[in-house]
Image 1: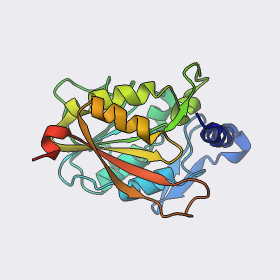
Image 2 (image 1 turned 45 degrees about the vertical axis):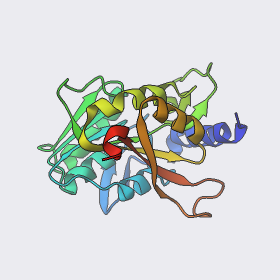
Image 3 (image 1 turned 60 degrees about the vertical axis):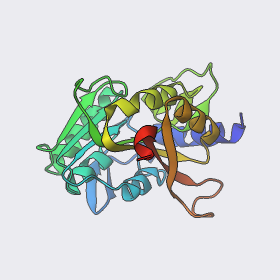
Image 4 (image 1 turned 90 degrees about the horizontal axis):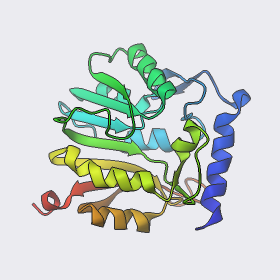
Length: 232
């Protein structure tokens, strides 16, 4: 395992954890957002903005965001015409942060925010046209232990959370639905392909930043579909 992704992740975690660096509010998509302590800050990297811009929201359909953080993407899904949005996060503070921004931007009639790990907060009959996860794409060693919610937002020990996501996401999609994974070249794309194959998911690179946009890395949006539907 290369040390560089872990080093980049550690640097990003330090920025997120430093009170003097964190704004209480930030601006994105011409809107002002509240940011609570302990929630991943979209201002220190391009991931939230890029992935939200790249996502094609299902107008009139159902959208699920896993790991919603401050709630930017979930709110913008409602703004862009989704009929129903569900946003989940394993962090209690992130759920409260997202709920505040949902109310702030007047989309509480469309967006429901739930606390829990991956798909655990969903109802058994829930199905979605698009599932999005800005994943903790930096693969940490197997023995890595997350100290707090910020670690969970940046690192995934042994890609165990990615493994569970890929194994389960297909059952939450509508027949023509797709999952979108916020990823980067700091992640382990080979392992992601292996996990997708095991889950019978077809993989397509939906978007990627041009070389030189971000020094030393590129952001990527990976599309996943149930393989039987992708052949149709």
